[in-house]
Length: 235
Image (cartoon, rainbow, N blue to C red):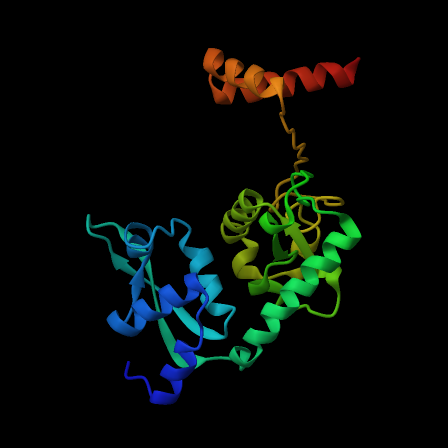
């Protein structure tokens, strides 16, 4: 695809590291694969990198190609038109809004991960839409449309949402009742009738947990912890 000078200028105006890396690679090579994102740039979570580009208003198309070892993998290229919804004009505003949102959320809820309920340094917390942007769109009218997440919780949420059937169905109400959108009040976890308890180990408990894993393995250790919790509740 031949890009006009105007489009190139708009693409080059996106300077945040991850989306800029993806954009510049596509400008140079015409597309970028999930294999290249991981091996060349260290982005193991390709959908997150693609999302960062799309949130800047860039129309990124996903298709399938063959990897270096013959597997079918995803690749991304610019769509036609390259920009949609004129979101690029909002990039600066979104950046400023993110800082205001973060402060408002911390003022209201404290510097804590909404999923793991773990206090963290403010600089480490990340803002995310409760209902994924790809499903619910932009929701800037209410800070409670957003949540604070630790980096690991954000990665876990992204992976789960992108592998949920609702990723293609796009039912906003379905997402609104999910653990990953409202861990404080939910009816399902990505469509499964489950409840989740997040356990944080600290101080000497960490060593105890590591010893349990070394003795029986991680999966059996988790099963044992579930058994202990169940026994405690029955008492």
